[in-house]
Every structure is written in C-alpha cells, then in structure tokens.
Length: 186
View 1 (cartoon, rainbow, N blue to C red):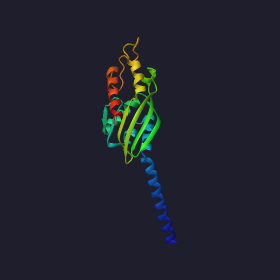
View 2: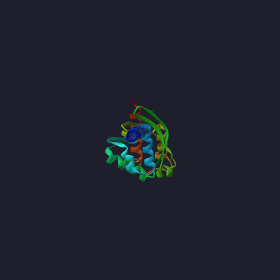
View 3: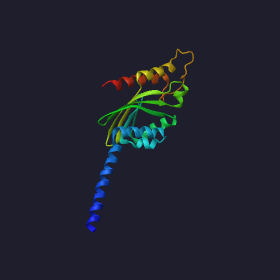
View 4: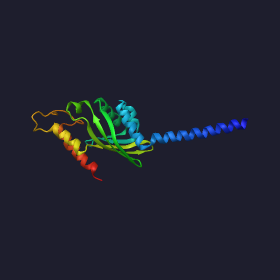
C-alpha cells in the first residue's frame, strides 16, 4: 500500500510539473506576452504593463523617444493610461521571439480632434517571457491624419497649441516622420 501511495504521489508530481511547464510556456509565448501587455494597458494597470518588460527593456515611442528600464517604462505606460488610451490589437505575427502588429489607438485627444482611431505599427523582441524592446511608429495613413489637424493653412487649426507625445505639431510631425523612415529601414 505504501508503495502504491508513493507511486501515485510521484505520478502526480510529474503530471503537475509538466502541466506547470505548459502553463509557463503559454505565459512566455511572445504573442501572449504582447496580448497581456495590451490587456494591462487597457485595464489601466501601468505597473502590470511595465512588469512584462525585462529589467533592461526599452520602449521607443511613435516619435522615436526612448524609455529605458522599468521605472521609465512604467511612467510611459502611465502617461498613455492618463490620456484614457485604448489599444485594439489588429494584426499580430510572430517570427521566433519577434512580434509585429498593428493596433488602433483611441484617446480623448484623438476623439476631440476627430482623428480617432489612429493606426500604429509595432515590433517587439521577447526573450524568456519578457519584452526586451518595444518600438512603434505611425504609418503614412496615420501621419496624414495628424497633418490634417496640424496644417497651419487650415481656416482653424484644430491642433493649434496641442501637444502630441509632448511636442507641438511641427516638431511632432518632423519627429514622427523621421522615426517612421528609420523604423521602416532594415
């Protein structure tokens, strides 16, 4: 009887550790990590979002500004959440540990300027379940939306004096265009 109990306990331990390994693999799958990041951002949890990054992780936003380390990444995530941002993943693709996607961003400012949603293109490198790099840029279609509201020749410039990513329209457009070109260059 004792041997039967020991054998049964050993079988449970092996089954439990195999099940745990499968659960961990599911949590560290690169696409799953990105989906969890978007869920954390949409639920307003900047700390949970930042926790998905490696200690030496880096974010490069749509104008090429870098945020390195969890503290800075947490601040970046909190700023997006403060703008009441919503991030809807569209296309997601993974090649090994590199994930690419497009997402639609809506926030109070974009809605006020009547340009919501704004499509963003992103790429992240995931290693051992943690995000090492997270780089986003605006595709030409989205840049055109910003150009329309930033255009100084308009009768009423909707975005006059409005900051995008901490920049006034002309600086924002220059930075976003330069970053888009560098992000698209292999």
